[in-house]
Image (cartoon, rainbow, N blue to C red; front, side, top):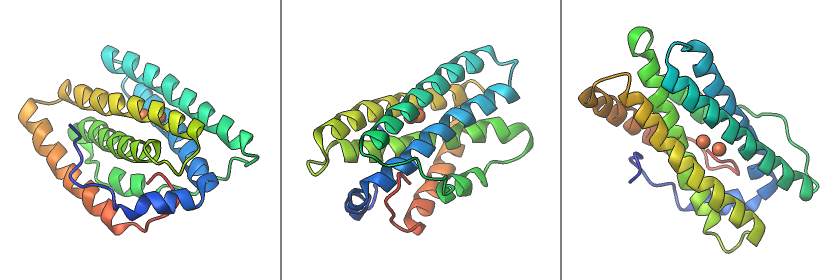
Length: 190
Ligand SMILES: [Fe+2]
Ligand SMILES: [Fe+2]
């Protein structure tokens, strides 16, 4: 069961499919940033052995996803666009508290971004309008992002007590639903 508090607007899928190259280009950058932010957590918390090992493995998977999306862009004759920035992730990261709550919040925000990615990649995977090989790629990547969502919640449970994790996750999930509802629908993953 997902940690998300809202479902994606049903119009999003049509918008994403209206410019598949742009959706793929944005998706490539999402995978690259997922790898980079996992490595940033490793760099900031070298003393947490479980976190270091899990996030190094996650960064490797995200880079494999990045390469898979790059291959599809290349096959379609589309170049990797420049990174447009990600207002969705930036607004969520702005909610991360400083000090002793910082790590918990970073892990929970990462869990929510993975959960939203999983939801939207699964919508693409289920769309008959998309060519078969792209649907199969999205099916594979969606399953992987679902595992990442669970991993980040598990890592969060190692840095704070259960009730505190649940309370803060609820707050951030409410904020995530508001942010998603406020952002325009574009041919992007979020
Ligand atoms: Fe990924
Ligand atoms: Fe992921």
